[in-house]
Length: 163
Image 1 (cartoon, rainbow, N blue to C red):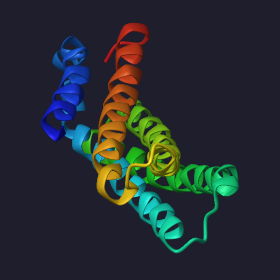
Image 2: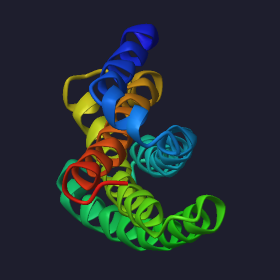
Image 3: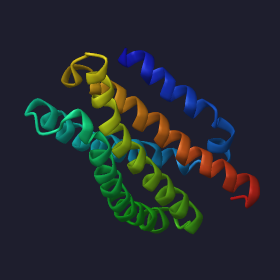
Image 4: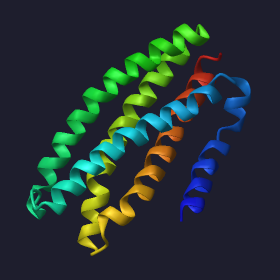
């Protein structure tokens, strides 16, 4: 399953080969965007699975947990996005690259927070142990979403502004 989902993430990257060829600095940020999303999502996933296992999260609490985690994802995404954007500017000397990386980081943190709640609750609904199956799905979401947000925004910038 992991191999199949890795190919899905690779397929998303391959959609943007021309964009990467035109703006090679993008390749440097791919693991940063995906990795930070994965880390944040795993933290959310751990909290939700723990709460499910301890009985602290009942079926009716899903919406409350989702709102809380999305708000945390927003705050975390803004903070990490600003840092990544500033480092992107400092490292590569491109304000545009910094803005694209920062925006993609924010969006991926939101995707990570959302999937960190929805995946284990969904698996539990289908009577699949969230502790066994959630991680692979979360990694897929944060990799695919992170690559799509980052490279999609970059493609728009290349098309409209140029680099």
